Image 1 (spheres, rainbow, N blue to C red):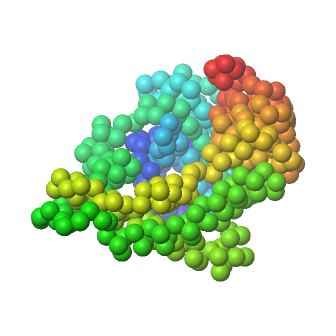
Image 2 (cartoon, rainbow, N blue to C red):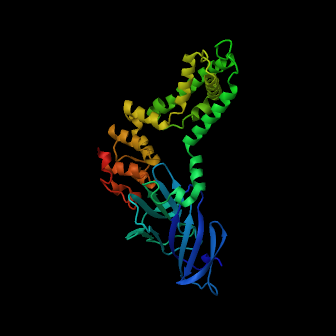
Image 3 (tube, rainbow, N blue to C red):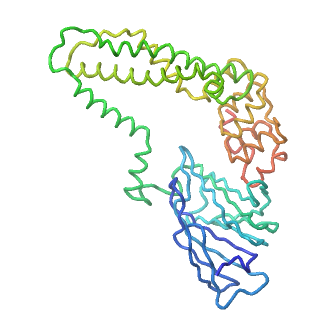
Length: 410
């Protein structure tokens, strides 16, 4: 029977296990209605029904849900996140909802945890927080209208503290993690290149040392367009950003200057082919201990540098520009961007160059943006340098404190 026909008080107790950036799965779920065990049936992965003996009576009911879930964690380089809609989107009002997150081994160090209610368009951080011996409890302070939810966000700042790939996922999880590793892909690519180079290696001493003409033509043909492409992107990420604020890099080029963009992007693609072939031929001759082909190394190095410059991250160019030219007239918007996108080095550079940590834009402060985006590193840095937590209501339940990371002051 659909539980939403009669219940408007819910208590949810969640236990999360494993860390895997895959869709979550509920392994088991138990329910009580007014203190009595109820039957739970699952129709879809995220839809279940609670049945009670007889039929639902009209009025208020206390519904307690206890579930065990796997694969609820998002894994990043230095931390793990748990973001979960606890109550779901009920079709009747929920008078009160409570969530308790327990850690049998003790609360992890540097844990950041918060709860909010409402919808994506109206978020309220007014849940009452209670510290438990082995966890944290949140309780709503107002009824949750239909289709709203209680949402919990947890960040484990010590990666791998709560779960271990190998221990909890076995060899399958370990190999899956290896397959996502850039180092593994680089190693595999080098192995393929080695095999191809060996097959292409000449079987006897060549009569001359000149480089293959068709590869030299590819290098020279791709160099002008790749150079122009790299210089244009650098211009957008440095001078244009400094003058006009954050850019959608490449957007104007690909839309307003299509006649220039197409030759540039084709040259850029051709540069990869030319450099790969150049590497293979050179390596093949080296395997056979033949002399290195006589390439025009000036054009080869120029093409390699221009190709590599395209891959330099936007963050690096913004940070370098701020450090050399100052924040310019868009320092405020850049700090808001740093707060929203968790760009701590950029925030540090902007503050050092005189941008106020109390910066406001669009009706909110940079600290409020950092907290609402749950970018705790930037939020605590702004607090360290004078941002006002009273003007950032989203920070109330995040456990932020002045001086909690004193190393930033050094």
